[in-house]
Amino acid sequence: MRIAPIAMVLACAAALGAQSLRAEPATEDPCADRKSTTDIVECLATQTAVWDRRLSVAFQKLLESLPARRRDRLRNAQRLWIQFRDANCAYFASRSGSIARLEASHCLLRLTTARALELE
Image (cartoon, rainbow, N blue to C red):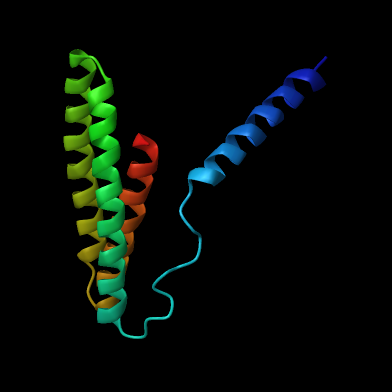
């Protein structure tokens, strides 16, 4: 009897995993060919801008589809999420050395991408 619930959980996990794979961004690092810190940071900023536009579109679409009460909750959640993202990535930027710029840039890209996918 225990096998059936475990099999069901595994089947659901597999289905959800397959669905999330379609929505995930490419796992290749588009900035891997860059050599200098400045070039990498600029590349990451460009990628973040792309995902930020995608996030804005997803946010607006979702906002328009919700009743007023839920729209207010989404707006509040998004404001708080932006504060979290900025504070979290500022933590990475607070280190010394050029690695801090890279870590902060990766943080912004990673969190913005995740939020865009979440809202989509």
